[in-house]
Length: 461
Ligand SMILES: C=C(O[C@@H]1C=C(C(=O)O)C=C[C@H]1O)C(=O)O
Ligand SMILES: [Mg+2]
View 1 (cartoon, helix red, strand yellow):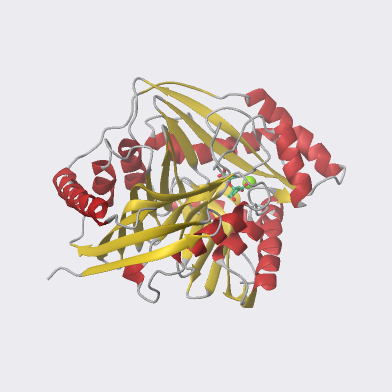
View 2: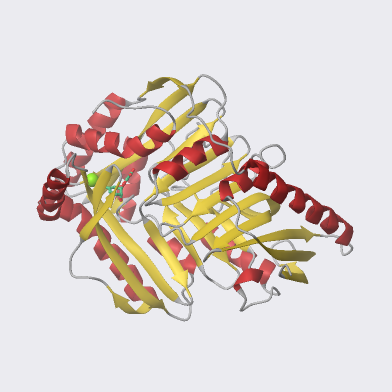
């Protein structure tokens, strides 16, 4: 017989001062394609969907529709506010059973002080959703939960309607399983602010030489124009097929899809144990195994890249020492090789202390010197001054948490926004005293490659 769990709880969300009724039913289903489930929501839930898969491919999440959203524009308190609202919403949920966990998915923008207009105009500084239909694929099992949060104490009828719709979605996903997607047809691309970007590298290295900062991550964007509107499942399918060794994510809000394939973990918490990763310092992949090995060795021995990397290790280690006990950090970096690029990589782990939580760690870690710089405030000021764009969710924390404090956030790099028939790709790099504009420019070209390929484009080598 099919496994089924049901819970109905009453909660009072302090910030709203109202009583809410939280209904949740979870069923175990035979394994189905997460992308097909996502695509089954194309008509009714477009603009309210998300997709997530961890690096190890042991967990996949899809959300369709919004049962409840947690959004705010608080500049300093956005992490705390999300945490408080989520805790009060879920305080009466059954604990101790993974299948019964409601999941909150979303992200925090890179810099709430940036209000430059563009594709991120009006995007909340914290944007999270509990999905109406939540698919979790974990350890070879598939669970679908239906969530309803209502002010109405007699919402059973409404909940029944959602359960019927769930069965339609499952059916549609099973039918769609065979669908294959073509690459979008790109007709044009351009590099806005290319000259400004190159100039900014010199300006930032001067700043660093004048001892006004030590490291600053400067990014730029690439704009693509397609022949026609491109759908979210279409690009996600390319990312899923082409980037197996990264975190894969897609988050929709209205007509914007933010998506990517990031190699970088910001934080993961599992049963009180916390994990992070220092990823900074880059070199391209070789065309042969031999060339690849030589490039990797030269990255491990390179002073400039080693410097970029060490700032990140120092800061993440310090944050772990403040929030955890039993912090473990290897003595030196190793290589992290992904399809287009190799990085210096140092994993960090520790045991959360009594007051630390995944969102508190996220708050303290973001932005690490891999995406912001050192010292943090000076680097942020330099980014605001020299980067003529709004990063939105690029380089920012994206991920999920459950009601028991488990969860995972990636750093949303190797990412892009899709808006109807246009896409904006983002890439940057750590600038230190001896950075050179041309080689930093080339590093961003390599970092654009995964999303560019997914979107049907190609840059010359
Ligand atoms: C900023 C990006 O990547 C970051 C910068 C790196 C570098 O400069 O070497 C390497 C990995 C990331 O921490 C990006 O991909 O856009
Ligand atoms: Mg670099």
